[in-house]
Image (tube, rainbow, N blue to C red; front, side, top):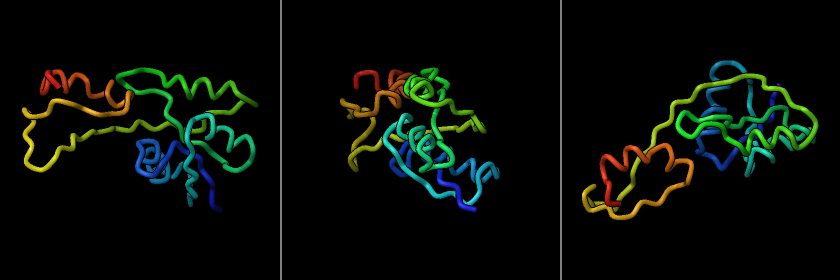
Length: 128
């Protein structure tokens, strides 16, 4: 039986990677992915019956609790945590071909990702 799982999209997010990990561990079989824009939307999809499950981030090891997710738990009928997965994440710096790390003066990133890489940036390109 196919299970629809709402997750913080778009495709390629760490949340989708966690969803794939759930599938690999047998927690959810035959997954139909439903990308949404927020934990609130993921939970709403479950509450409205458009999805059987929601895959959302609840914590990261650098920045702590994901408050948007905890807030979403309070927005309607109660939901229960079904399974948990620890997901190792890795980031990459993309630069124009031929540019050296020492030449980098500006970094553009998502605020949550920045929190997770700020130590590396401070150590390796402190002037950026």
